[in-house]
Image (cartoon, rainbow, N blue to C red; front, top):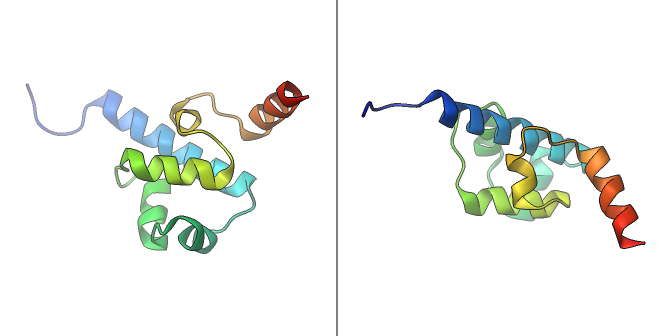
Length: 93
């Protein structure tokens, strides 16, 4: 077994990075807002959103909940915050 990042691991990290940023922006939050809501530092969040840093599951959950989504949403390579929000709002009616 080789050490280092596998392509699959890197792909998941980049998916979470992209989706964390999409969710935050969709919620109208800045990285500074996220610090206040979640306690996740702005520099760390910036590195996560750029795909340079792995993120733990606890922090994925904090970001998801702060932005109105579920943790599994941020792992979805087809994540579309606007579409998902509309579907969930329709399901609540």
